[in-house]
Image (cartoon, rainbow, N blue to C red; front, side, top):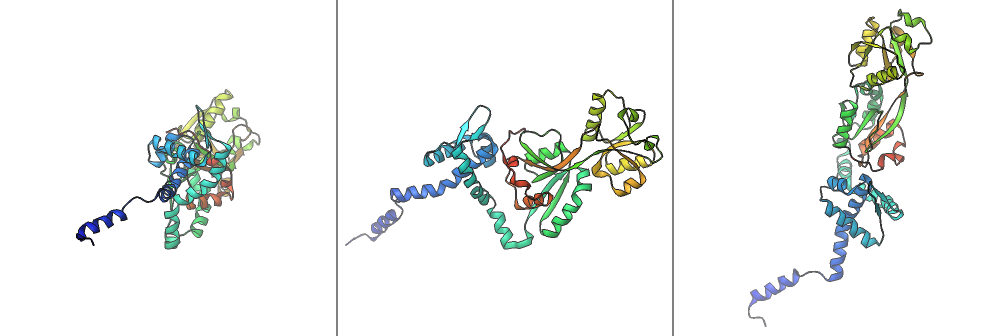
Length: 339
């Protein structure tokens, strides 16, 4: 019989806190780390580099590398091929990515899905970057439909230029952007949906209004009213006139399609605008001529950061723009960051 009850109690506590048997400990290690390994692998595959994956996961690069190596060792397969310029998936990596991505994405969205199920329509947030013309002419009907279907989602529209919109995407300050793109960076995916012709607008009594076929040389003698130089329209007009060696004059530089149309209607000049801003009312007060034979169409669509996990709110809005747009892998492929 134990004479010292305290010693007996201490021995019992030590036995209770002793390490588990080797196989039990192994199972615990497996269950506790496999998700981390898969997250590291999926982020590397989506973002295209160990350093960007580590940045996104708030881990050191060696930690991410060790998780990947452990996963490859446990699966006895090479998942990634490393070259000087980028990382690509092997056949085994492609197969695992297709299986692991929904698991990791589901884990990423777990908190949100839980709030949505428990709080109903009160949960949700969506931030979209777009330019003035997109917000004014393209988005109103989409926003109206979205609000009717998802009244509880807090929707924020950031009125920015293309350059600022891309910066917001790279910093994860917005979910998606909607607008027009000319040069698409490697780390950005753009899916054009809407296409608009360039239009020459002028007062109905303008000398060019009597002409059905207008050349750039016909426009040269008249002062143009254009958006600021930093914007795409001005750059396109300047590029086309210079390429064809046709001189032109900018009489007024001002922002906002509505302001430009008003100034043209007042007889202060003529302008080249994108067809997105031309309404039926405009055609009644202005003479409008298509300049597609000289200037390129402007395409508008969805802009995303490659490798970004899109929220259900963002996916729902994109489906409104074009159902099935996200079935293409382009938006999901890793790109090189230009931050």
